[in-house]
Length: 417
Ligand code: SAH
Image (cartoon, rainbow, N blue to C red; front, side):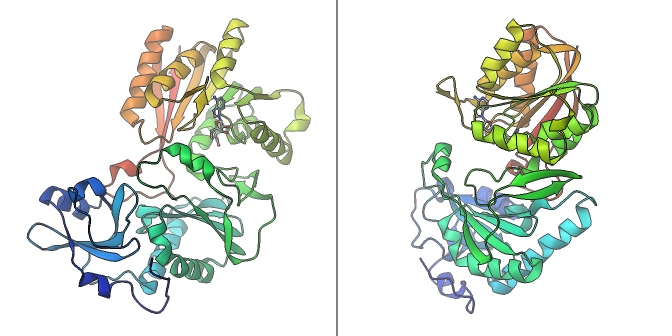
């Protein structure tokens, strides 16, 4: 691995070591904006590059396709940073991209949306393999590959300079070839890279509501910014309804609903720690004092659905947001099939006229798959169901054209008769 060096460009020596040649089809994908050259597309050839090297990709006639960073380990062999032959991957270019990302947020983030949002969204901001989230005065960068380490100093220097955070943390999310998503649970806490350490827990705001976050927590800081459009939609429809929030985590959906006048909220999560933070979020927003209408239940979502159905307990608004990987009833969650089972059971606790929100960030479960799972669930539960709203990623999660997988977030609101 090449040592980070802010003074030199990474580009020149590697160009002489030979470009990576790709088929016309792969070249056209890359030229249309897809930022990843997958290892499969190398046709079994192992290029003579080290992880972290800047490499050139050319088409079958030797024409320049793009320049990117070679990764020797994962399913992605090259993360393409530019299709402009004159653009280098150096400190100045990384700084320009950090500046451009900030400008986009200034233009497109609604006023009053708060201080917890995505500052750099990987390939959508021309920095594939890197995301940076802002939580108040602190930034958390996620690095998705060790091959990107040569960029970190340039990135952190630019962020410190342009965004003036009190501290910058780094969370490494490296995955080696063949590793499953389960390996993510072995992540360590984020490490401080610039500035001062953050308090163990502190408050951020979103749309006038308050949430506690821990920026060093390995698996989630406490608030997922990408679900913000879904939270807004829930708050628009929650007034006067009884909410059941499944896979509630820190209960952000429940806080939005309670503030918007939900009659009661029931938040269900397997993790007792998540429920402690859920209660804190309710307290912070002055919602606990308003009576016993808010329950925080620890346990399996599906089991609770069957229990509620047995007891004939009904709801007018159900939110379903399962994790990608989970031990549901002792087995690994399988996206499409288990989603259908969840929605079927959720329809079983719906009062007439209820709304069911189905969310998923699983790449494996496409919008079409989710649509179908809901349709099959409606059939199984013998309910008439219509999808009335679809929300996706907010403006702080821009997606590069030509990279359809970038639209990973699904949030469908269904009306149930
Ligand atoms: N809806 C949340 C995010 C969900 S994260 C939000 O608005 O922020 C996924 C959550 O599902 C985690 O908190 C995890 O503890 C929980 N979980 C995983 N398996 C579960 C299960 N079988 N039943 C209930 N909760 C589960």
